[in-house]
Image (cartoon, rainbow, N blue to C red; front, side, top):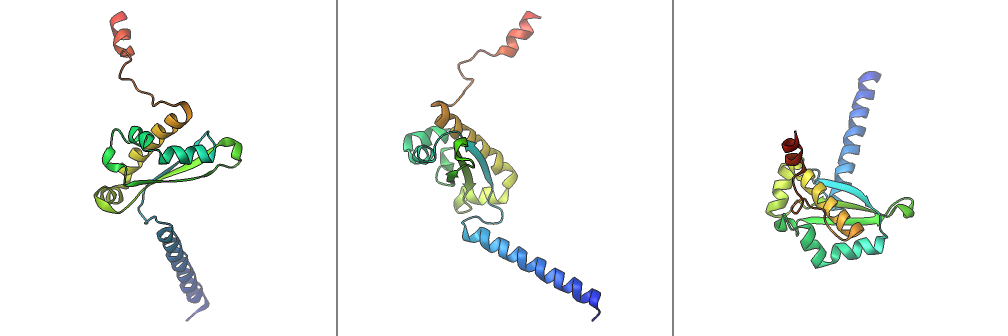
Length: 147
């Protein structure tokens, strides 16, 4: 075997080992290779954000559009760096169960759903309400009528 071949084989083995270690670390931390997730910083202290996530009333409001996902989505909270920025929240779609199977099969569809849930949670924690357009007049129609 030539030196060039040895170098190629060694490089391939190292790359493969790194890939295996990476997948094992993801699996150990509860995320499969395809577990979709979204991260966002919420401008509130860690304790307050964690308490809000565990509050069943607030969770019902966050998951109002998709209540079947409430048990399939988990959150990991940690203080943001620097801590004055608030709390970093990561929503992860669990790959167990029916909704998790869909999330792992179609991660491109699950990520926007997680983003929507995360935006609803952020708005609720920071302002106390989730913004909606249901009671607002449709401004676009007024502009068209005026023209």
